[in-house]
Image 1 (cartoon, rainbow, N blue to C red):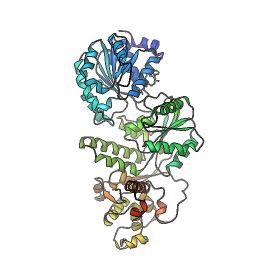
Image 2 (tube, protein in one colour):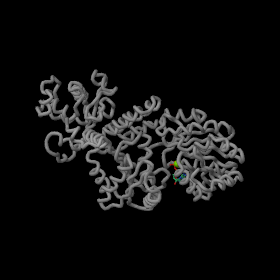
Image 3 (cartoon, rainbow, N blue to C red):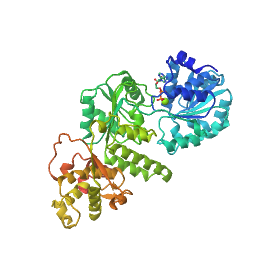
Image 4 (spheres, rainbow, N blue to C red):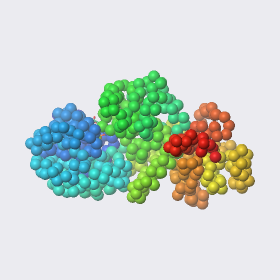
Length: 545
Ligand code: ADP
Ligand code: MG
C-alpha cells in the first residue's frame, strides 16, 4: 500500500487534508466500515479516491445519477486517475469491463440497480477490489429525503465481499437517517464520522413571498456575481428566467426537460461566467464545480432542511461572502402536506417531521444558523450575526389569543371562508359578504385594535405552516392536528414580525387588498388551476364566495 499523504501531494497537489478527510481515509485504509457525513464541497470524493489509489485493486463507487458519474469520472481523470462509469448509456461498456478485469481502473462508477445482477458480481470477482464507496448514501434510507429502493440491493452485494472495506458518504443526514444508513449498509456504530456543517460565509435570509418577481429583481439588483435561482417546477424556471432577463443580466434556465445540448451549453456557460444567473430546478448544481457562486435564491420552499442546506451550500464554496435567500409561502406547506396523503405511512411520518423542521426554520425569530446547525446535531454557542434575524431582529409577539380567535371564527363560519373574510368578521366590519352570510350576528371574540389585526395574516401563515389550519382547493379551510392544542390553550403561538419597512402601496378596497398575501395568492392560484383543468373560466365557479 502507498502512503495517502504522499499521494495527496503528488496526485492531487493539495497541501493537506481538509477537516475530517484524514480521519475518514485512515479508517478506510485499515479496512474499517465508515459513514462519512460531510457537507457539500467538503471533499467527499477524495475520501474514496485516495484509498482507491493507495490500496491494491479497484474501487467500486455506487452513485445514483449517470450525470453525476460522468462528472466524477471527468474530474478524476483530470488528476490522472484511471476512472470509468459502467452504465447503460455508455457505448464503451465492453471496453470498460475489459479495463476493469485487467486491473487498469482505479475507480469504477456504477448505478445501484446494477448491484443485484449475478453477472455484475462475477465481474467484480474477476479482479481485486480496493473498496466499495456508496455515494449519496442517504438514498438507502426511507428517513432520508431521497429514498431510492435500488439502494436496498446493495447490502447483499456488500455482504458477498465481506473483506472489502465499505465507505458510505452523504452530505445530508439527520440523526435518524444516519442510524438507518449504518443499519442498512451493515456499518459499525463507531464508524460514523461527521464534519462540521457551519458555512460561516453564507448569509441566510428567509422571508415570505410578497410579490416574488419584485423580490427576485431586488436580489439581482443588489447582488453581483454568479447566482442560482431555484424554482419548484420546469415551467416556473422558464417563466422566472424570462421575467428576470428583462433586467439586463444574463439569465438562463435549466431543467431536466430541456434539450440536452442547450442544457449542457447553459451549464458550461454558467460555470465559465462571472455574473450569470441560472434559474433552475434543484437538479442543477449537483456535481458542478463552481466555487464562486455568490448567491442562491429559493423561489419556493425546499423539500427539506437537508435539501435547503445542500442547495444553499452551492454558494460561496470559495469561502468568500455569499447570500442565500429563501422566499416561501404558506401554500408551499399546503401542497407538500397534500402529497403526504399520497404516500404510505412510513414515508409520510418522515416527511411530516421534515416539514415541521422546515416550518421551524422559516418561522423562527432566532438565529437561522443556530436552527440549521442544531438540526444537524451541532451545538452552536452563539447567534451568528450573519443572518437576517441577527442583522435585523424581528419582533416576536405572543399571538396565541389571535390564533384562537381565528381558529374559532373559522369554525363558527363552518370553515367555508378564507382568512380575509375571517378578519372582517373578527374586526366587526359589516361588509356585504359579512352581512350577506349573517356573520355580523355571530358572537365571536372580536379583534378590536389594529395591532391585533396586523397579526392575523402572520398568524394564518404560521397556522398553515404548522398544520393547524389547512386550506382546501375551494377557498375553504379545515383543522389540522396542531389546531386542537392551540384551541385548548395547551400550546402557545408566537409569530415573528419583520423589522418595519416602508409600506407597500395597496390595491383598492376589499379582496384586492390581499393582493400580495401568500395565503391569498395560494388560494387564487389553486382556483385558477382547478378551473383550467375543468376548462371553465375561473370567475364562473369561483367568484369570491
Ligand atoms: P463533495 O463531494 O463533498 O461535495 P468534492 O469531493 O466535490 O466535494 O470536493 C469539492 C472540491 O474540494 C473539489 O474541487 C476538490 O478538488 C476540492 N478538495 C477536496 N479535498 C481537498 C483538499 N484536501 N485540499 C484542497 N482542495 C480539496
Ligand atoms: Mg460529491
